[in-house]
Length: 243
Ligand SMILES: [Mn+2]
Image (cartoon, rainbow, N blue to C red; front, side):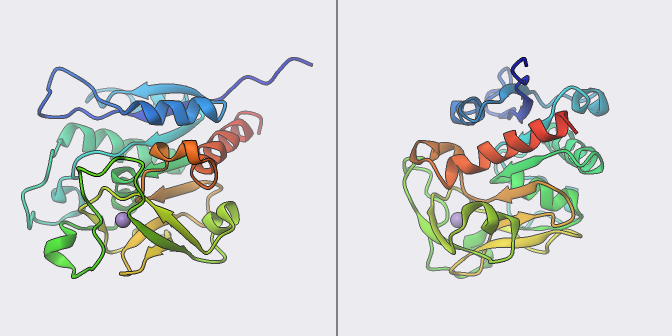
């Protein structure tokens, strides 16, 4: 029997307004997918692409981190000046997620990616944790190394995330100044920080739709439970290919 083909995992890149002639993606997302046995396909946020045609060619989708989503996308007004806002990327990723959900495609959202999933499902965001919540936890310190542990999270028993991680507490890194506020329709919370900030969400009706606020891609060298998310999205993608 021939070896099964590895699945194609789309990973969204950023277009950082500070470098308008470049698309940006940290290499550890790519390495996470490769280590899990997937073929990484970097998706550049481009207006005018036929999203259906993009999704027809990949087997799963990973939404990477990045700048703030324009509050107009969730019907809100900006209470702060959004950081690195990029309407083209917002539109591209929101459309990708809505269609990927319709297709029941495996979906992993990381940091901003989790927030995109929440907004695509009708939820909204805390626009600035420091301004809108009082918390003893420092969720964002851009000077911290990417693999530095920042705080612990509680994984909620009974969730798919708990089923994968099989631990009630894990220590994670943290590089976000925004967070999920109102939860999107049909989503559920799967992890909380000790200040009750949402650290992971999932879609209980779909096989694998998961968002995490931390950055597992920068912690994959530690193995489980960080590489587990990449292993699982890749495994689910293979399952879809052969369904
Ligand atoms: Mn955090």
